[in-house]
Image (tube, rainbow, N blue to C red):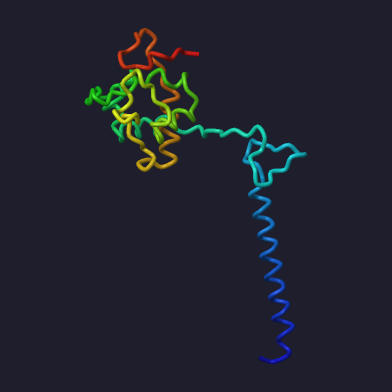
Length: 178
């Protein structure tokens, strides 16, 4: 290689190194930026830890698409939804709670956990536990996309029991409406 090209090559390499360093700095700054709608206190920058007071914010989702997910998974085969026109539960050995009143009783994160990790919380006195202590409800963590889970939770959150409906057997008897 001719000696006159070395300064040009060195300048090009230096420019490339500066560009990579600048891009990495921008990426780090973006990674440390709070999500939209959340701010970090100015005296406590976020450096490899969870900011004090942080809480997961569940996305809103689309209840109509969530109802489609409910139908696709045939959730109605184990869960009744008062006020909806789904086929009735077909498997009474795996009967889960009636769902029309669940939305106001639970935060969305609880409903999501019940879908993707149903054995996390089990009401043992209602017949929801299998012989080994796990939930009779299968996990849908591998069957749903994240968006489908968000939409299904949105559908469950907007459910309300019919005004004149009496509590159904197999429902969430231990819960009260807030």
